[in-house]
Image (tube, rainbow, N blue to C red):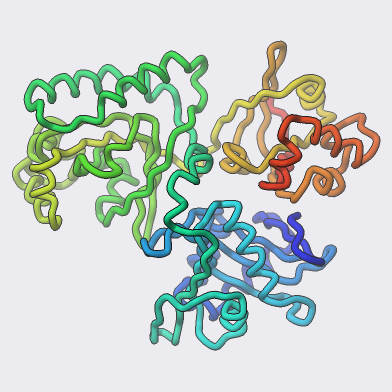
Length: 453
């Protein structure tokens, strides 16, 4: 649990004893009129871009806050913000909305957000608490009831460029993508450069990256790559999600030139989203050439010809002129399921690996940063060292402000078998280089494990 004054916070799971009460409160919450209660409940239950943190006093739940896992980027002038979807109090006499807002600020700082964003009904108690905590009005609506978009800035938007590299490199992609697609990508590049050498080609770095990664990979587990967020209208997003559309055509300019093999793209709109792995990138002089070479059905399912498909792209404002000036990219996509278990490979020294293997150690403590933030219940971890390995399934993940708190809550023997006290256990973690400072800065995770092999 993460401390906040005299209270503490804990992230609930769908099996939590408090879960039904929290979900019931979300269904009745009218202070966030643009957050559909049933949609929010569905996303909470399926853990689809929603986290629920419960405020406790001892074992008594006092309130809860619901926020998006992914940062909101709907308004460019505000940067990337933590979007709060709901706040509620179970015991209004024992705590205030201010405690929940403090939690929002803590989470936003960990995620390196530029600020905190709420779309909230005017005149309500949560609204007044926001105003008291230096939130400012960005926009106002009158329907379905008077609602204001409130924003509280945490950091300068102009300073955030490059600051999220640790978070952006946390997604994993399979190594076989690079090896199986390399030859096809190389052939496509050679064909296009012979046809029209004037097209700016980011592929010099793409192919070098593919060859470099291929040499580095020793096992077909996961490689890290960057995550890119792109808006995409329906029906195209739905076609990608169904597997009918496997190629996305974009102008070869701006952030498109930063795309690399193995990176991930999250396509989203107001109703849906899907995350894909980039399996290949091929440049073309025009959308017509792309459609002819890649196939119309792969790019625009349901369109009959390359000429008709080219007109679809040309109707997008500015696309025709920009395509002539910069060329276009055919981005080959592989569907990335966020619901299926992911596999991770982590080093672990003896005797701890042996203790997991024997079943005496059931919880692994790690810093809450980097790849650890991508872990989910049901994911698979292969712990290994030079002499042994063991494969486990993640049963539960709980966040704490420090290793001392983790040991106190989870039990020393479950985390460090044979260690006599919480103090002694905390010193063991602190002796790991940089662990003490990183734990203070990011908090820690207790990863409950079930041995598979």
